Image 1: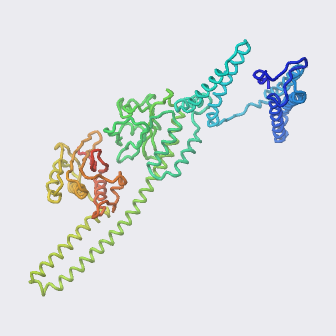
Image 2: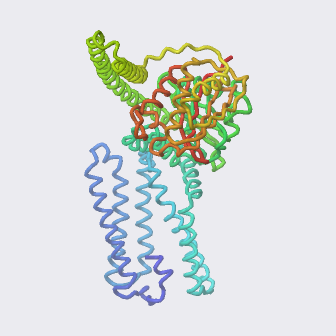
Image 3: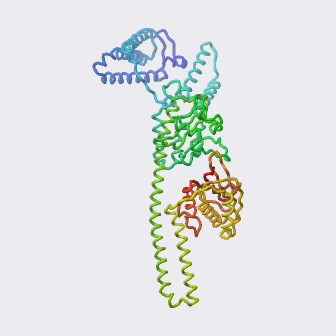
Length: 581
């Protein structure tokens, strides 16, 4: 109401008995609002007093009495103003005395019984939601104070300029509220200056738990983890590696594209960073003591990674989370380490559960395939057994008949071919792979194998680019079987040319064989892993076993295979083998 006297002087009249204001004006409604607020406060005080125990009432009695005195004084003066529609100057002195006495009682109760010795917690979400309105309110307060000073010194502010300043301030506040960098900077300032902890661990944990409810696969879990990290942390450089101690760790996610598509960011199990994270809860570049274990130039220094935590559960290292520097120029601390450790443990549990569920599903499928193979082998055996009595019964009487001889040979040859073909494919289904590994020259094995397969690969030109010095430790017969399946797959898919290239990675103790054809490529829905599922094929006469058999054999000899479509067209299969010594 006193602010109304300052800014709305046009509707008041100064008289001998005080300041008179019109009925149903701004002052009248302001008094009504103030009176209702006082009644609400009195009602809350009544409820508060009734809820206190007899012991607590002794501590709070002066606080409640002082509050009632303040409310009573304000009720009396506002009621008088609304009744007589005037401000009486004589009442201001009495009102000030009553308010001062009431505040003295309140202050005495607070100090005497330490009533403010309470731990008050205001949620960060509430504080963040009030930042923009508070900034706009401060702007309006400053603008009003400037107008007051100008009016006090007899200066006038044009209405157009006043409204222009109002719109400019509102636009500036909205722009800052919509700016992601400004929002993160404000959040960082509030969290580090007004709260004990930098993060609300419970809120982040619950948010991640809600996202994990519908996450059943590895990609869904990684996306949920990224969403929580992006909302919580003050960095936009996030990397996630996933894998195991056997095959190493692949780059599964990157928040900001900083990697070179032509480079391989695979972390081997023997990588110094992986070895360091197995022993420690985190890696922080600014900390001292890890220089002896981690070289100065690593993959992390190339990607500007300053913080990494492992994704571990028990003794298993399932991956790692790596972060770049904060865009607030702040330093990572214990709050960041604790948050990442908590989220990393939760993510590792979800990843392990998804992995075990996938392995269980594959085991059940394997059991079904084994049962099916037993039925098929039984049928093949019956077919061969039925053909044998027929030949034995008719052979004595028609053995010298040329036509019978021809039919007999055709029958036997056909049965043998069918049994051999089915048995070869079903042996892979049962997992009976016993490799005889030895060190061989990879170039010679591939070149010799293509020469032997020349007749079967009629219509497919194979170009081999290799270095004869590359040695691999593998089973050459199984490797030729893999090469045969891949080349026949390209030929049946419609390719007329296949390029075979070899890459050697000494630091990873691996050799890659790249087979790129000029065919139509692999359907997108089968990439990256579905193409290797059994009985899944896109060819009319295909069985869907060839590529799955390749995958099984490579797993048995310690290798791996991936498939993708080349940018220039055609399918690209990458076979990884362990290098020789």
